[in-house]
Length: 229
Image 1 (cartoon, rainbow, N blue to C red):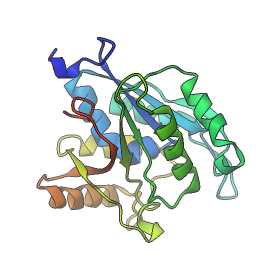
Image 2 (cartoon, rainbow, N blue to C red):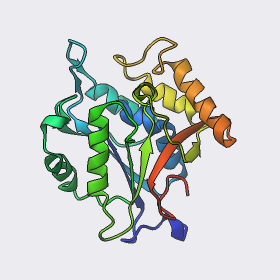
Image 3 (cartoon, rainbow, N blue to C red):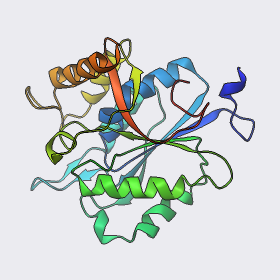
Image 4 (cartoon, rainbow, N blue to C red):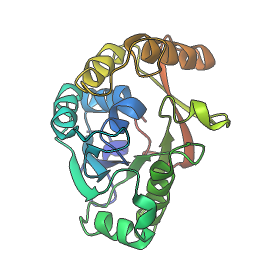
């Protein structure tokens, strides 16, 4: 194992995927997660602040089983749900949200989370939590914001992609993982369609010179603590 794959405590680097809802982990960074697992050197924890129950459409849809199936396709361990109510994070003190994550004691080297250009309030509050738990007190912690198709598109704000990961070999895996979400996969031209996910990856590839890519915004970045460095 190369020196760049050793974290400050002498073990494998630890990545925390801290997202609001089941499916955000796959939509935002599924290809990158699959690549990190394939390359090795990372332990990946998927934390979902919500309870995995979608209540925003007049029906209760339980996405917890689909999330576990998607993570299995990506090659990561099943997600942990922290149990906060969907679309109601703003009714909970941010300190309580952050404490629920901090109490797990995961000490990540890298946090993959949401971006502040996102339309969804739960997503933006999750970013606040990531900044709190990712404060570099004992060691550097990189933080990258992911792009969630539709909630980023529809906010009237350009997603500031400043870091790109080549997922040309992992795109099909990402799409297969998202296909596990029976309640979320949509027909084209919705961004949450097979064609939509492929087109977005192709667009980001065109931006950076890869065939297909995922785009991130760098909130804080350190050498040796980026996804595929």
